[in-house]
Image (cartoon, rainbow, N blue to C red):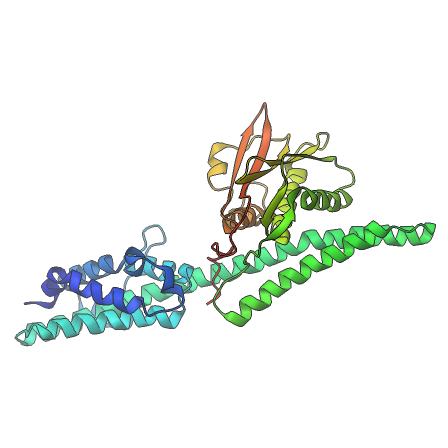
Length: 388
């Protein structure tokens, strides 16, 4: 049987071996199901089998054997290119991704030989064509893997710099208050407290970064829920932000039972991002309204509302995606959508969710729904940010 026909007719046996090998690529593959482990392998095999049946010139043969075949289009990437991109996003490193193609090549050849083919000139030539197609698929996959890995590094650094802005602004505003208080000889103990809390938040972010670098696993920020009063946490954050934006009115309303088990620092980050966005995009003559409601025994809701321009349905679809620049975005990471992405990931890490409503009559309101007792074993925030 010709090798191309063998690949088509014995695809399931080949894919089973691919799946078994992918399961060994830890830690990224630890929680993957069958479909994720086989990701695009069937399409890669089908493309290779089809390519082997197509005529090609000597020049095309040499180019393909060096991994310089036709480049995949960014609008229509090949299955191999998509495989590399998704493997980077899933946390595989480049060696693991390359090993998958090496394993696929070895499995196909071994299984074919086990079928005892009659090796003549045509069969040897087809084996050469198979290896050329495999080299081309590997080159496409690694090209897209590298691009996705670079994107993830950029995203991570953007998230880090974005999250440092709020506590640094708090420190600077509080520092100015302390300087003024010294001149007037009036103690301002709350300003010193804000400096210490903002410093702690920066320390927490840097600790996350160090853990991330040391592990090399791309874990990113992980929630550490503790018993707390969500109303008091929101009161503290609103107070800090009011000192950063003294010209804006920021109100806070609480109702219901505020007791919960959440990560205080992460909730503070999420609320800071939402209020910061509300101040930036809301009408300056209207207050930013923060509401915390203990809905029932299992859920709490944090809402941040403002009056401003309506967010279109098209924009809402991508509002929580990272690095999506809006019409007013710049090139310095300020309006890259990272703040809302962080909010979504923190909510998800607690086992909750975030949503937005926007209309001309009611304004814009972001709502974070949190379980009253978050589980620290929930998926960590920023699980997709891999720096391989």
